Amino acid sequence: MTDAARDALRKFVAERDWAQFHTPENLAKSISIEAGELLECFQWNTDADEQAVRDELADVLSYCLLLADRLGLDPETLVLDKLEKSRLKYPPDKARGRSEKYDQL
Image 1 (tube, one colour):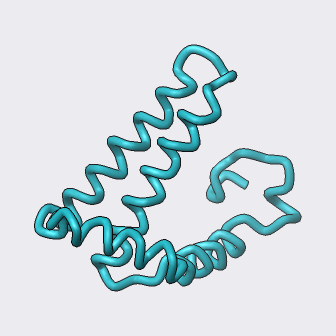
Image 2: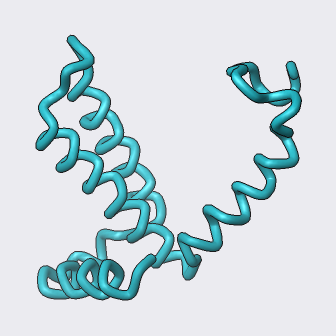
């Protein structure tokens, strides 16, 4: 998480005394709820309102960053570590242009 984003989220939460509600379970639930709201932007067509998508995506990302912070995890490290695992599962020569899961390549 960037220092600016982390600090802004921490300040926002602290000003409202919301950290008490930010258990890992509650944050994970919130990610799922907000992801559903993001999906709702595309419910009836592919031409979603751009501002609504931006707002819902920001909510999803914010809760993800809050959860990582709560667990003492670095979001950049999480993404890069998972990307390395995915590189091994999906080698370009087998996965290029295909959507099958790694065990079906």
